[in-house]
Structure formats: structure tokens, C-alpha cells
Length: 201
Image (cartoon, rainbow, N blue to C red; front, side, top):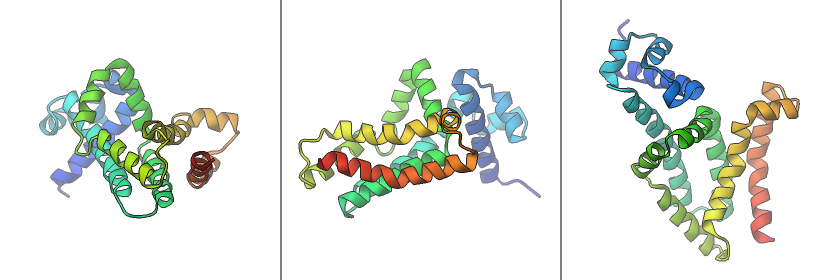
């Protein structure tokens, strides 16, 4: 069976996610990604000329998916509390599907902050626009005293820590993989209530 252009690209991106997650940008070699994808290095270079190009593609693909969802939710006309529930559900769900992203970004921020900053600036939906929309949503709800920056960082922090700290949490809480996944699903439902109580207290 002939492998199509799109399926080869998809295979490369999935392999790159896996290797970048384990080793970060500096620790990854193109040969390792080719091996992971089950292709030769020449074919890998045909699709992506350099490790930088592949890194950029992986990062942009994941973050475009995330920001498209978040932007759609924040900009919608659904009630504020529903927006928060959807944001937690989609944001945590995104990280469950892409568990390499949080630690990957933190690692790159420490090693090469300029690269991450440049990539964030070039996203189709800039993070600054998300912040602006969150600010408007808070103001529309009569919550003008809440700093929209603190609000969104609290949502990100509450969502991201259990994903990054997965091995630690499984050990401390003595959870199996199935129990950990159930814990995260429960967290998706409980975090919005936690936020609502905090902002309306």
C-alpha cells in the first residue's frame, strides 16, 4: 500500500511529539525522530529541512488547536459560568491528549525563552487577544475588580499542575493509571465550582 503525503507528515509529527517530549529540543536528534516514525532520515529532511522547522510545526499544530478552542469559547454568547466549565474541560482535555506540551514548554522556556516567545507572537490567535476577551467577559459579569490576568493564570495553573506532576501525584495519592484518569475527569468538573466560589465570595 502506498503511504500518502498527509499520512507520512502525520506520522512524523506524532514521532516528533514523542521524542521532543522525552528529550526536549536540545536533546533531540533528527535521526531519533526518523527512527520513531519508521522512515529514513532523508525522507524526514524532505518534509522538514531542520529540527527547528519540525519543532515549530509541532508547537504550532498543538497550540493552534488549543487557542482555536479557547478563542471560540471566550468569544461565544453562552453564559459566563458555562464558558468557564468549557474552558477547564477543553484545556485539561487538550493536555491529556498532548501531555508532552506542558513540560516541553517549561523546559524550552528555561533553555531558550526567545524561541517560545517568538512562536507565541506568531500564533493565529495571540494570547493577548484571549486575555482581552476574558477581561470583557469578567466586566460583563460585573466582576471589574478581578484582575483578568490573575484570573486566567489561575485557570492555567490549576489545570496544568496535575498534568505535569502526574508521576508525583500517582505516587503520593497511590493511584493506578485508571484512578489517575478518573481523578483528572473529576477535577474538570470540580474546578469551575472552586473558581465560582472564589470570585463570588
